[in-house]
Length: 80
Image (tube, rainbow, N blue to C red; front, side, top):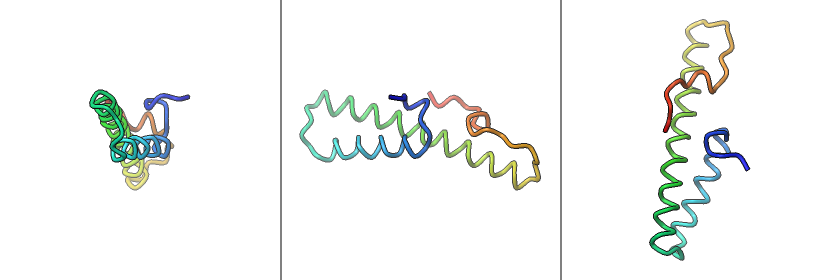
């Protein structure tokens, strides 16, 4: 299984939705809830990072850049 750092946006979003479902279910202990919350925050940060990278790619394309930029290279800020 890939880590959040390796997943694309759709996979990160799907994992984040599962975390939210687990938290909303209310059947977790306090420690399990905290762990799930930490995972959710990490996934949300990764998702924002990926969206920022996609936005930078679009901006480059709109600005007339003819060079294709891979998504991971467009987002240069470290999300961690």
